[in-house]
Image (tube, rainbow, N blue to C red; front, side, top):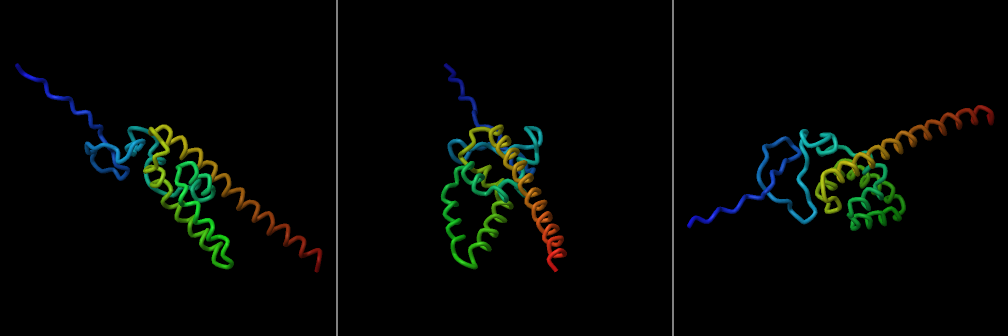
Length: 150
């Protein structure tokens, strides 16, 4: 009597760097394989700059459930050094935010990850351009005010 062989249930995992797919399981419960172009929007699946992680870093860290990184904001209380440390941390999150979110247990599937990254990146871009606009507006208004004062 022949016993049927069990069916291989491992999924194909696609790496974000365009490498060949390899059969593997996610590294932890809730993890999912990063997408490739055939599975969704490639911008949000590949590592790169994240405006949302840069501009809204606190919301980003809360969204991907990386609460331990929030302690770094206490460094901001140190005089003279704090603002530079926070800026360096924001730049780090902007550069590595997508990779951190991909490995986060906060998302159970690709759609949740892509939805979160689209929302946080659009919000981050809006915040950045509003910030630049306000800086320009203040600089122009101060230059006009200086003309009337002198």
